[in-house]
Length: 376
Ligand SMILES: CC(=O)N[C@H]1[C@@H](OP(=O)(O)OP(=O)(O)OC[C@H]2O[C@@H](n3ccc(=O)[nH]c3=O)[C@H](O)[C@@H]2O)O[C@H](CO)[C@@H](O)[C@@H]1O
Image 1 (tube, rainbow, N blue to C red):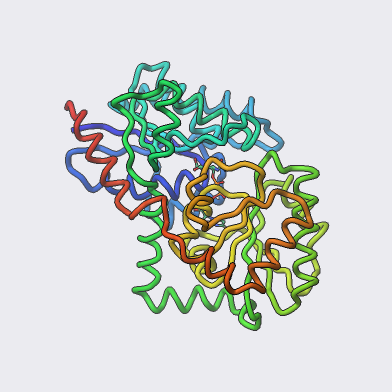
Image 2: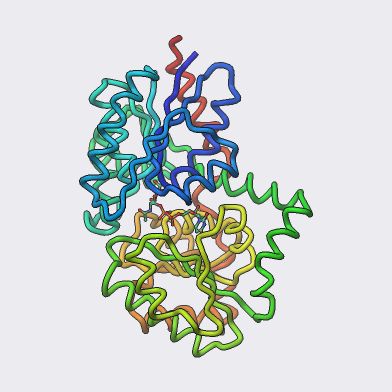
């Protein structure tokens, strides 16, 4: 029996680790334990409930006005007792959040092998995304197993001399989560009806543009440009609805609310639980976002993605033609959205690419690699 301790704290980590956690939890050859840090309290709890995951440990680290250093120190301090109690054979972290880095560091200090899921993503710019690019590089140097979602991510690690024979290309577990939730929705008319009732206010529009934005490096002037771009789109296309589930971070909510609230075809709503968000992605024509996970999910639903950043660690979507970088400049954003709304050829080109991020079997591949280290 192999005891696997999962450590995560944010909404995207929870979505992306849920399929792997569930695969190990139902396999008698594993004992799956879960530690959450609570870095995104409410948004995290929505995902735990959706996938029926119950944490064994909850560090509840968030405090009002807390910066990255205080957050990081609380996670590291909290992990000591968890590792002592759990005595894991392997500690699993995901991606590039503050929880990822400090969870991995705690495991490394306790000499527990670290498995890094979604390893090897690199934008090449240490400040974009910040602090994620630094976090993922640091975790790469602490981990024993590196689960790279794509061959490009594997090559990034090998170029840095990381991992060698312990780098495995698995696909991204987010596609496992997306396909699972999508099939739950498709197979249950009651769920569909409930979700559609929640989005009844969007039914009169010709097309929908779905927006999400929350990157730290965009706080300030970046967000102001983004908001002006969105306002321009809404004014130019009155029959198009813009729907924006606004992240709970106050540095996002303030500029978004002050620039965009009260405009009739802009709908600022609370962050959605994952099933509702998947349904909304399905309903929209295109997505305007600075999110990482949505760049990976949208091609599976045939939705073009305009990325409000100047760099991306996900070049595969650009190469496949399903995503385009548009930065945070008002005019560039408005023009790119306008083109997709009016030019059918461009829309069709961007909505028909194959998804380079996975086939829904990434968790099973990772489970099989972990089995090879079984020791109890
Ligand atoms: C650019 C970047 O560095 N992103 C990192 C960030 O995630 P990322 O930027 O993807 O984080 P987001 O907060 O955008 O979360 C995206 C996920 O949340 C879902 N969603 C979104 C809005 C909503 O209202 N409801 C909802 O459920 C989306 O479908 C998606 O699955 O941490 C992840 C976890 O380690 C990493 O994989 C990403 O590399």
